[in-house]
Image 1 (cartoon, helix red, strand yellow):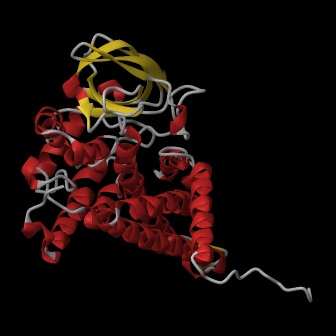
Image 2 (cartoon, rainbow, N blue to C red):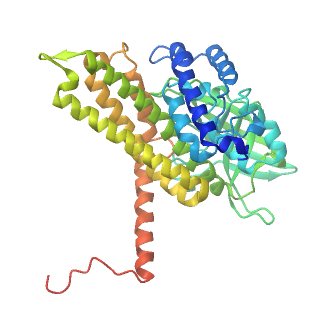
Image 3 (cartoon, rainbow, N blue to C red):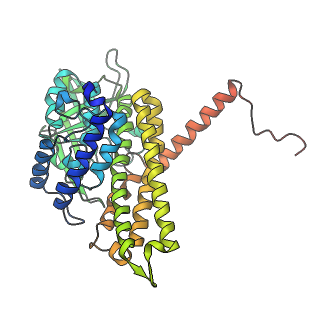
Length: 411
């Protein structure tokens, strides 16, 4: 993504972080919906207008398209500040699925596609969704099970299939749809991404799936494609290379989820720290009790470890996309579980108020629990992480490194 050189300076990045921090605390948090409720469209538009005026809107988007021009290796500190509020990323237009779609469009979209889809999306004038997950036995954690098809027709493609958990689809203006295509000309058989307007007569919204996370509007509905016809210009990237492009999107998208929700973990810890500062039990301030100190210490350890692995993965994504995507898988597993642990401990420290809507912690648990499933279940990621580790070690031994598990005949 092209950025203006001035945006690379440490002073600029820190100023953007501080402006974001101030805006979230003074403007966004007072406008948050009641725990468990959804951000309204009117409030979202009002806050987005204020974010633009504050110079913090779309931090990840190139200045060419109206963003702040922050390169990916420096997204984390700003995304964490935005994520300090569950509605902060939506207000700053760096929330999934739009953020991931912007990133992919900027990297592989044609000039025409950028003008039609990226520019209004980056400005917050439109919304988007990403059609990947399908009902069983279709694609979920296993993309090879993809069943939605796109068939070549005169001047374009006909899409037939059924997606589910299509986050944001209720309010989306367009969808990036992952389809299976046969070999066409020089293009191999495989997966192909297509840009489809939600107003297309072949697109039909289905049943809305009600989930635990509620803060952001747009839902997670079923979407049906009934011979939806799109022109050849709707192909995003090249025909047959959809799985390759999916990694372009999903590697950073997994990591930005980590960034945003780590911000919410920091907010949760602040709530707990404020609680134990003034709360007394058995004649002592809670902050002086060993049991409370253990919970707080474990929270700090989880947060700092998460921050470190996110930073390393983001730096790798900027220099080595394949290695960065692999590490983002590790980060996704660790951070999704660590953030859940942090918020759960904070609920425990706040006792009965922690599980009520007097504090927002219980709603935070609902928001972050799904991350262990979204963007690939943690179990699927662990399977892939293990396979990569085994392959890497086997290759090293084959290349001459000593085999270290030989115990010898004497044992």
